[in-house]
Length: 193
Ligand code: AP5
Ligand code: MG
Image 1 (tube, rainbow, N blue to C red):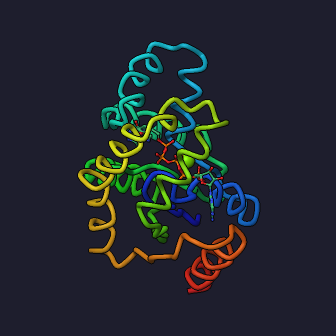
Image 2 (image 1 turned 120 degrees about the horizontal axis):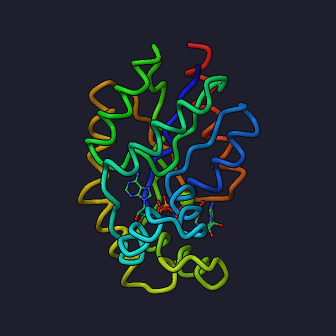
């Protein structure tokens, strides 16, 4: 298996690049944000509880997203590998993911961390908010809350994987093609290693 975490702050291009990476490498895309939005669209109880937090730009509880990932791993026994997008987002989620993978004799191969300035993140998300229908994109104060949550709780995920020498920073500004090429270059290095 090849298991990859595409890491980065809100608006850094995780979703955009994930679509291309899964097409090239045949990985299964697991985006906790997408799963939560589909729960909201289906008006499930979990979705309704998550929506209140998501609309404020806050993280949903660890046990909720860890449960979602546990089911997704169990439901995809044939996967060649997973691309985790927007997960893990706290140290506790990282430790839980490592445990879930190690139970299957697997682990994370690499964490690719997209680096984008805060100014660019806000510009991209406000711009997407004009058309996306994502309620967490329309208001600059919610976007800033999401970025603050990232600094407060999520940056520790990179620290966790740095201990295992698994984190590679990739410039997340430029054209989508340029960034994709840079990500593929790092994957190729690790895949043959
Ligand atoms: P989630 O859905 O994960 O959102 P996010 O991390 O805030 O990031 P985005 O999806 O907004 O951005 P992205 O990095 O995917 O960038 P994209 O490619 O879309 O999470 C949403 C919420 O769910 C959280 O706030 C939390 O409440 C909850 N949640 C989710 N996971 C959780 C977890 N594990 N634990 C707890 N809570 C969780 O690009 C953004 C825009 O930029 C697009 O318009 C795109 O077209 C554009 N763009 C992309 N690349 C470029 C480029 N190179 N140049 C110019 N524009 C570009
Ligand atoms: Mg996304």
